[in-house]
Image 1 (cartoon, rainbow, N blue to C red):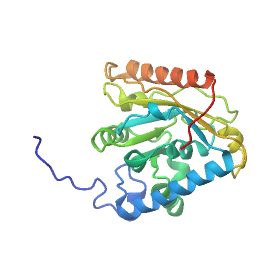
Image 2 (cartoon, rainbow, N blue to C red):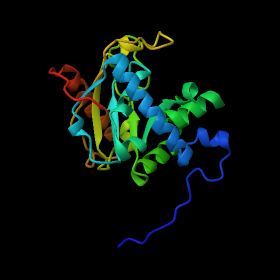
Image 3 (cartoon, helix red, strand yellow):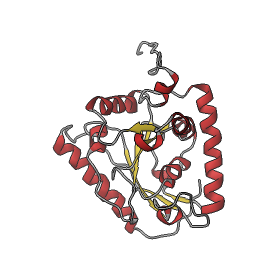
Length: 247
């Protein structure tokens, strides 16, 4: 039997403002309560205002760690993927969010950290050390990452190429990558709109998980992971059939 070890919180000693923007942030009891209430409210909103439906829930791994990846065309995307999760996976889920937008000031940082449970990714400023921290936390803390490998929201609604950052997180590991396709998010809340547009339907399709344990952790391997995940998401976008499961 493996010896039990006490590990201090990853954000121990950080000032409150630093904790909000830290990749090592841990939720605490207050954060867990706020996030649970937020998730319930988001699910109710998505069902009532967008008729939110999910297909392929059986493809989700039985528990963390895993990564969910999807096309990115709206601020509703991370909320929808989070709403599909339940139990331990829902409590351990972190959306990767643009630091310059979601952590721009203390008020927005608090909402992003405690309600959305987001972790900041600083576009053009994230270091290799940041990626190493994210990779370690994913495996060691048994987290769920919600990631949009395009890197930014599509202005047209069409999916762009996936960036290799996903590969840097999972190449050479057995952590599942779950491809997802969101239909209707661009119409429900396009990037050009300040607020969502109710009564536009929103559907989520979840595909079988991918694993990249045999892929080398290097530039070529990272690109291979990104290409495979992109192909899986595009395949889901071309599938047809009734969406018959609801979160």
